[in-house]
Length: 133
Image 1 (cartoon, one colour):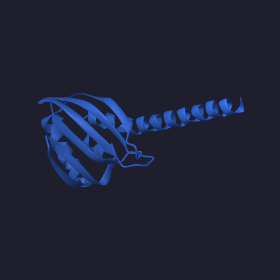
Image 2 (cartoon, helix red, strand yellow):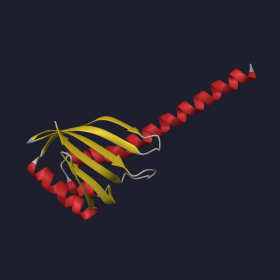
Image 3 (cartoon, helix red, strand yellow):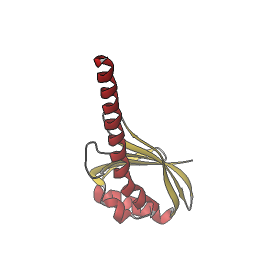
């Protein structure tokens, strides 16, 4: 009887810990989602890691945060957002938060992949990749 109670208690604890980690990742991505939806490279710049891998349709480049802000400003100027929503979010087995979103802009619809730096209280974007659908 004691063994069953212990297993139920441990299972419940793991569920709560997992749920809390998922909620924290979602909180981190809220500000990033808002910046992209508003087409604000300045707002997005607050959440950029010192080095960011940026991709557009399979062409990936690494930029520092200042360069990334300029690249995103140009992208938003050419493809002003109509909408942006996060379709899926989660974390890898190593605890690295990520999100997949759908960006609808002036020149088309893009699937967006965002990977954050692991174990940060504030979101820092490590990778952002736009692929035209």
